[in-house]
Image 1: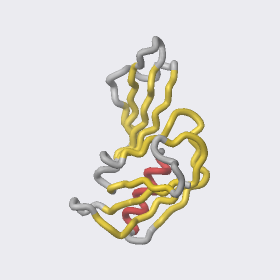
Image 2: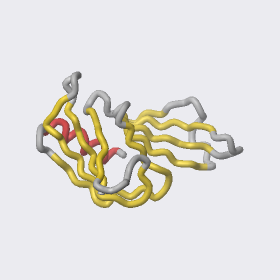
Image 3: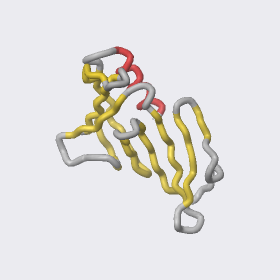
Image 4: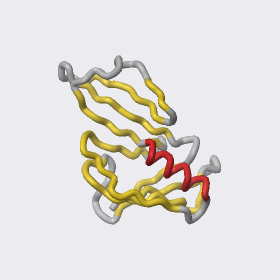
Length: 129
């Protein structure tokens, strides 16, 4: 998540035409969701380990970690959330029916489209192959 966030920030700061490739991007447990509406990336993992108390947020750098209880006893969803709303407006695209959530191994391209949203933030496209 840190590497993904760093790559998005570098592309946003370098300007139009800047791009980075990440291959492979492996999501071996849980699922990775790209929330285009709220400009954040969330890695959601189901676990039986109560790593932190529900309702408590743990922040390390740009990643916020929190635990959500499930309807199953002793099962939790731990979420690592990378918020990008102050850095970029993100979009997700693919030539295949791949969409969010992502599970498995992918190659991705992070690209500055050269366009900006009304807030002046760069439009960054995350292309999944």
